[in-house]
Image 1 (tube, one colour):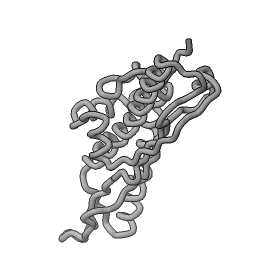
Image 2 (spheres, rainbow, N blue to C red; image 1 turned 90 degrees about the vertical axis):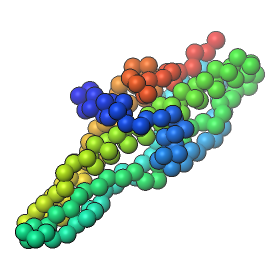
Image 3 (cartoon, one colour; image 1 turned 180 degrees about the vertical axis):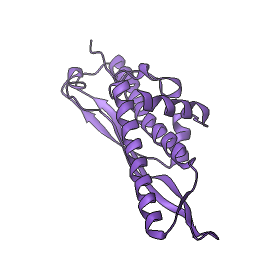
Length: 192
């Protein structure tokens, strides 16, 4: 959990905002569809998550130029693109009661909050990586190789933080274990 600790600090110190603020800031597309099951017990029967988030985590070289010393310099800049959250728009089964509807709505909000947490983690990783000093190398080939290595390293950090967030929260089922704005209700439904 060492990796995630640094990202959690970054999230706490950044302009985190509400879940809706994150959607607007990152231009997240939300896709939903009705989840129909035979009964309440079928909701958590699968091992997978009921929601998921897709990213295009990418990097580019900005400000690349040859300096007066003859060295090539520039900055490797990371960005998030095509961020999509997929989550149930409704959860239904035959003979649902009003209390069942209330509980499934609470579950849907919890799933959504967990998925927004993935976006928050990605933003924090991006911002940490973008805070690095510019890169310098003696020639364009060395510069390109170093930039690609930084890009791969950044992508691996992003992936590691995502895995650690899901491990900490058990893919949302223990969202209460997260801290700060990431904490929230667990993505479980107790059937009665």
